[in-house]
Length: 466
Ligand code: FAD
Ligand code: NAD
Image 1 (cartoon, helix red, strand yellow):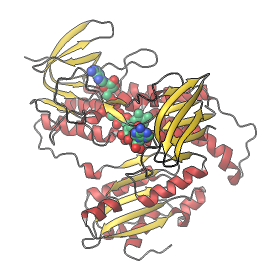
Image 2 (image 1 turned 180 degrees about the vertical axis):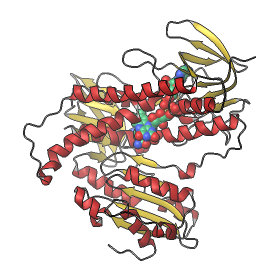
Image 3 (image 1 turned 90 degrees about the vertical axis):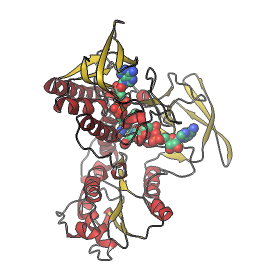
């Protein structure tokens, strides 16, 4: 007789969602997590709610308001003298948002009868888990099924060891003053989002990116537009940059890097290392793949029957919504439902900068290399009434469709509210819609979504406003 039907290790968006779904399906469920909050109290929500998605978006919103008041409000006739930013108050608001949301998960656990067990979990064979509580006491629990959702941690760079001035994303979410000069290694999602936060608040930001192309996974047209917009905002982005050394003297960081032109030195007050994340697999005796992620099949089951793994710890897109989808799928699989593998090709990707970038489906480069004949339609927000009214006209919607079947293959948006507009495209691609379906869909006026409609019309050469 086991203690639980299911034990989930990790209470991030993969683990807590899996636990709730398991409990909803009638299984006795416990969820173990060793995370403590700023008050040293056990907390649910994982990286995402505590030091990831939510705090970063909270700061992006705060810094956006400040930037708007400083640079854009006057154009709306709004005058604001003596504008200032209170960083402590901004962080206090961030912590309040985190607290509400993490307490919300605790309430959901209560409502669904998921047992939260604070502490560190170690797989100890035969579906047993040894749990070390924060006071050092231990217990062993058994389960019919175990779901590993231990997430990931920032990749560290030997040439840039962390200290008071060189920080990872968690440190960069907590600067207590605006660093006058901010360096960032890595121009990926974290580098761009946190770089935008501190740039809007006044930092001179320089990003050092190793790859020769900016935002390598995004649509090339959109990447170019975004790169130009970031430049206008004052962010410097150096591509092909290899950091070879860092040193700190009197609170100043010296970063040495090389690019095609030779060796350079960058002097900054703070340096953020944002070069990706690595899986948390300590204490888990399960087979790993060559990149160090837990190996799973299409139902997220490891080589050991009854032991599953989901979320960042299995690799693929390291996104909260990807982990949550896997969590639901695994819970339903364990409950004996007929489940389908998660549709990774329908995963939306978003970078929450200005302009926002969002996409789903294939890029032109992928279509070209697959030899698929496609037609592109594009519509700029500059020609969209709602975008004009808001005063934010940068960016566009680009849609790629199969030339023969008319099926929508990829939608790429940069601009105001791209993160929300993409939902229509995700639904369209999930339902295997054609461009004609999108054309026939009535879009309200004046809305930003009219740009998506016009881009669909453009695929057919029937654009009205362009
Ligand atoms: P996690 O959220 O990492 O949760 C795993 C949990 O398991 C953690 O609480 C950890 O402490 C716990 N744990 C680990 N090992 C053990 C153990 N042995 N015993 C007990 N507990 C353990 N994604 C998005 O989709 N959108 C965004 O906007 C976004 N923004 C981000 C911004 C930042 C700054 C960062 C760092 C990440 C962001 N991400 C975003 C990525 C997102 O946070 C992750 O993809 C997501 O949190 C992964 O969920 P998970 O449940 O797999 O793991
Ligand atoms: P990332 O993979 O998005 O970007 C890392 C960047 O660093 C890449 O462009 C890479 O080429 C570059 N890089 C790697 N090694 C380097 C080196 N030695 N020198 C210079 N550049 C180097 O990773 P991230 O930005 O650290 O984010 C981690 C994870 O969190 C990602 O998987 C991301 O999906 C997720 N995340 C998502 C969001 C979002 O969905 N909006 C936001 C933040 C983070």
